[in-house]
Amino acid sequence: MTRAAWNQNLLLSLEEFGEEGRIAASYLRARKTYIGFWKARKHVGAFWTPLRTIHLNTEYYSLATNPADPRTLTLLIHEVKHLQQGLVTALSVYGELEAWQLQFRLYHQKTDAKMHPVIEKLLSLPLSWDRAVLKQAQVLMQDFAGKGYRADLLPLYPLGKEIRYRLFGKIP
Image (cartoon, rainbow, N blue to C red; front, side, top):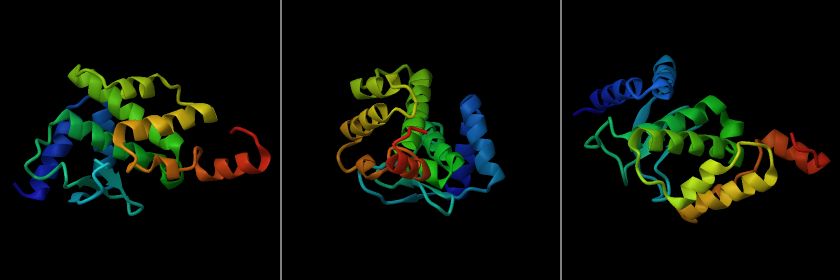
């Protein structure tokens, strides 16, 4: 199968994956987002770029991957969420928490698979500006994905809010 055919099947599968899938597919189609494969660190399933492209890690995904696989679809929805958030929010623990919660809620709704205890804890966190919650999310993400998943390098808040917090001590 060619990459173009695989991508077409992926977008069709997304559209059939429920409301979040339809939203993601519409977003990707409207912006003609490139979806490809690229080798990345083992702690990364997929990633987006500032050029607004999405790459699935060749350690785990290839043209042989079923484009209707719920793990692939929810990972793609996670990356689309980052593109929707914009660069500044996506590069924060707040942005990661939002995307992780979306991905794993959808995955477990669609599959009924037993939830990993770390993911259960992550999903129980409120999406908020509470720094203690965001620090806990940062730790949980690394507990699940491994220390090679560098959530510890991200600011807790989107950068402008993080700077304001550090200067004035006020939560956004």
